[in-house]
Length: 419
Image (cartoon, rainbow, N blue to C red; front, top):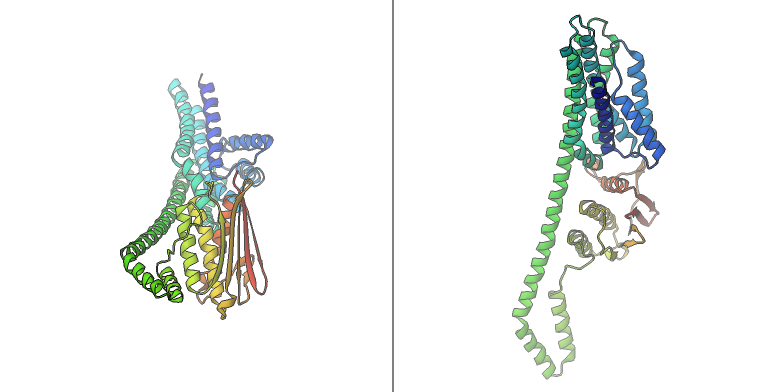
């Protein structure tokens, strides 16, 4: 009965460890690959670690790397980060539990209580991964879509110390003094659990920051509506006076005067908010950028046809429009002749694909370094991240981004499958 309980506990532990990894990155859509991934994660989570055991700890680490790089989707930095975060916990936890279990099993006072205690340790190891999955599983999934390359790199640097420490400690701990490694093993577990919490905290901070940005966009949108309503009220209040003036022009048969007066009214009471799409937040972003461009004598042509609900988060959709339009406006303003300033935007949802194309005229050389756009502003550390942010969003939805430029034009094309 105890042996059966141990086997069930090991199976459950393997399942939840596999599910936890899949919350970070998704396994490839292939039944054979999924089987290999599950079997490998089961073997990794249950690996037996003893002191001075170079073989198990090394080959398990190698297996983890190979499986992550071949069986899972996502960027290499994400896959490496998963290993750096989870592997020290697996090794440290298994080292402590296996060593204690062995010592209890071969103790001189071997009793039923000792046997049950060994089984309890195995079950606790299983419960540990179940709890980690329940607490952090869904948060991991959100974190993988929010955290960028630099943050993952920072996570890896933090985890490098526990990774090396537990590896070296297990290899160089002499036989009979395994207890000396317990403190380092526990420290590695606590440290990497702290890193897991840190990942969740960073992702949550990014999400809150994005939501705050969304609230500002909504406020801007409703402020525009309020201003337009106020203009309409003014027009209604003064309508009789204006009609009287127009009537006087007509009575005097001054058609040119009446026409000119109507044109003045049209310019004065023109509603600035336009309906580019049904998404109020995205519409506010486009309106704000469109109005700013017109105020700066930039010729704009916007053709937006995305009235259906997109499986793209509003935050990400707004970022695509805002970042690319900001870059286009910035580039257009550098052109000395206003007549040469032009921005064309086309967004379309058709046949299961969202396509976005923005083209703008440029007046200076485009600077790229290692595939990244380099701003020509004085403080380059604070600028030039627009294209990089958009690329991250496109990658998040497994889309493609294509950037082309010539001496006179700069073009960004984005295609995302939204089925």
